[in-house]
Length: 525
Image (tube, rainbow, N blue to C red):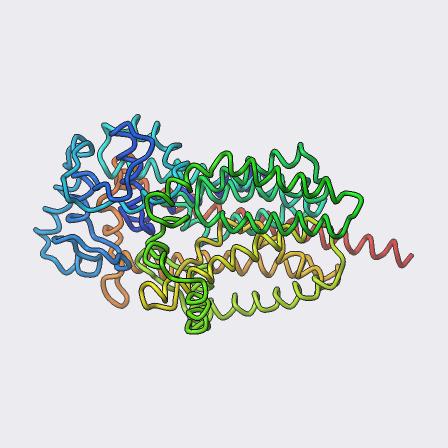
């Protein structure tokens, strides 16, 4: 497991180093919140607070991702950046590298608002101390280091997720197999390798699942305290953790209905879970409600705060659900950052087919009696999806678009997703076929990762003509520690780590197949 974790970190550091400045979704706005908290000495900032002078300057100098809905006066997207005269590009790169660190403490009145200040604050608090320690570094270096720290925080979901899978299945081989798959997921690496709170959200949600297993099967106060703390920390990280509240209430009510002997314990422990979570996090949501008139504080929620529930329900019937869900699933499989780089359609069709098979297996599993941990995972994951679909409806009613690229948000509950997928496949496949199915799926994940990296993401950054690459484009605006060769060293480490994960997976699949044959032989004998 430690070797898997190490390979995951090596892969992540390459992703952190490959993505140019601000190419992660909303990265500049997340960084702006950290910077404002660390320089102003304030643990909470207003959602309309302007970004610093250095971030404003960087947005006017660096090539920007084409997915940005906001472009400053002098800002240019990456495609247009390479159409600029060489002298202009050199000027921009020189001025970007020379931005004084002192500008990080200067906030022009009426500047670009740091809209991510509407997010729950826990992640930003964790980054305050590192940001202060790095305050004398150049902007590019600071962003790179905060990216790596954010990824390292998110990487904690690997050992926590392994423990979760092991508790769920009571089988170390299955837990290792699931961990190998998760560590190889390309969009997970892309999601965690930017300055954002998604990594901490993944850790908080995975911890919630881990402690929730014991609570779902033994609903006592001791277990409820741990679940309540995990839920409270999740709520202080991302507003979409609100979907976990009804999920846990549903599980607690289910336990009370199914097991009459533990009805009182189930109900009291459920109340304890919610109460502890509210004690930890309700102050934030009360503050948000006072300021915006909404619980989440999202732009769509603010626009729709006077819209009735009936109007929202009517709006759900107006959504074009097929393209909306396809977009969510596509951005869950592989999207190359804020430039919205995509791979060939066959990649998406393959994984959509795999998802369809998993759904069939999950339906079959529903008709088989399972422990309460299965229903816990199903409730948490299902309610999270319901939140995604509500967001699609809110986008249509507020902004007139019935789609959402929020597939990367699903990586907060990725361990629930993969564990449920394994339950589904085990319901469909006989034991002797399971190790082969695992080997095929692991190889498919690896191919998706390597193919997406080398046929879509890298070419987008370095392709000059149809059959011509200019790798020197990767070296502009790079952190000083990497120099001219560091990125290529990390590139090699990424490939080696990916191959190592595949080899470990194939060895695990072979050993499992051999054990299955031995058990089958003994049974027949």
